[in-house]
Length: 85
Image 1 (cartoon, helix red, strand yellow):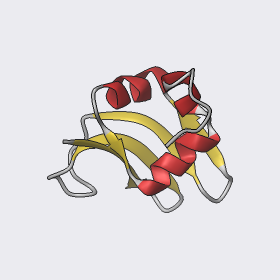
Image 2: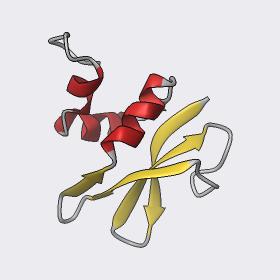
Image 3: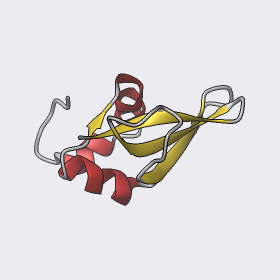
Image 4: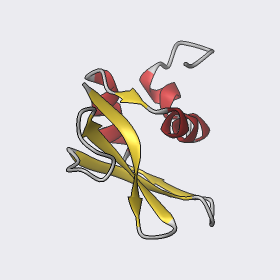
């Protein structure tokens, strides 16, 4: 199973990666799909890559799901629904 989760990158930034559930937090990722800087509150998302993994059944962790909701990624995945995850 694949998850979208945060991976540490230095002291401040966090990468959003698609990673196999069985690997460690700092293990080898399948693909980097964005980054999140909680101090500056900056987010960069590769939306087509995120949508690809979500369509294939990847599960975002709680924190990544909150980031994706703020960026309104679920509206692109489910355009006809009013309530998202």
